[in-house]
Length: 398
Ligand SMILES: Cc1ncc(COP(=O)(O)O)c(C=O)c1O
Image 1 (spheres, rainbow, N blue to C red):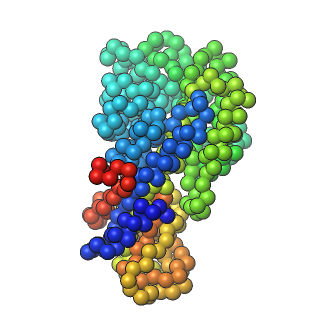
Image 2 (image 1 turned 180 degrees about the vertical axis):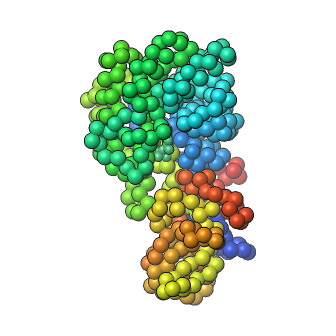
């Protein structure tokens, strides 16, 4: 665990006068990880941060000087990113964009709009005519996987609401050719998230490269940029087993050369893999009880703060930080739940725990992405958890 987090937890244990429930973020670890990711990439690659993973101000502020830009997936995210980091390069994607959101993106002069459908492309033509501007865009494509493995969260490679069907590509290209206001920069792919296998991801990259080269030859296009999406996963079942990003990047470099892609800018827009590891969600055990033969620990907070385990349907990795009370349970299997009156408020099921007492803290790791921001925070009107951002580098500035 991060020494910064450890220090802060010890301090909190000494000073807290109420049962604790908090998110803690190690911003120094976030910066170091993002920097390593950025530096490992081959020369013709860029790293954008998909803000949907965690758009909190200090997270963005930490990443802004390191990444090449931010990706927004809604008008709300776009406005927030532009306000917080007006100098940053922005991408705007996502299905079901409103005209007002597309207009905001055009007025902001975003680097690229990821177009999801033919009708969105037509709406852009109308907006450009009204505003007297051009739209720099990529066509988001949903292509078949050609026998490649998928993951547990697929956005493409099968029927989904995301991206254009390749059958619609000729019509989309005809629209682009007909309207000089539509400036096609290239293609966008994000077929899956939760990718844990670097080899499978390299195979996916190869599929993207070959598909785009095929389209270039077929339609006489020049695609200068290729957005290869995000999707690098976090192994919640084996939390110390990391996707080997440096090895992936080394092999990517070789693939880029072999596939003659050095002249194309490759853009990653990763979310989970960038921010998940810097976040921790801490809950204090309020009660321990046996019910129909099973042990339950009821802790302060729950899935209304931290929906990740419910959303993923998994037992979230955690460890116990013992408090001052003598153990009430030893070597027991315990289900960890929150304060909500729904049986779905479960963070981990029947977990082996050597010792547990009321007042102990449950520290959930990998809670920095798709966690607080995807939670149903208003259910039961419990107070929000404290949000603690830690950095030795930027002390006093947060
Ligand atoms: C279009 C797009 N890009 C990037 C991402 C980020 O994915 P991840 O957090 O898995 O890296 C997503 C996630 O849903 C997405 O839909």
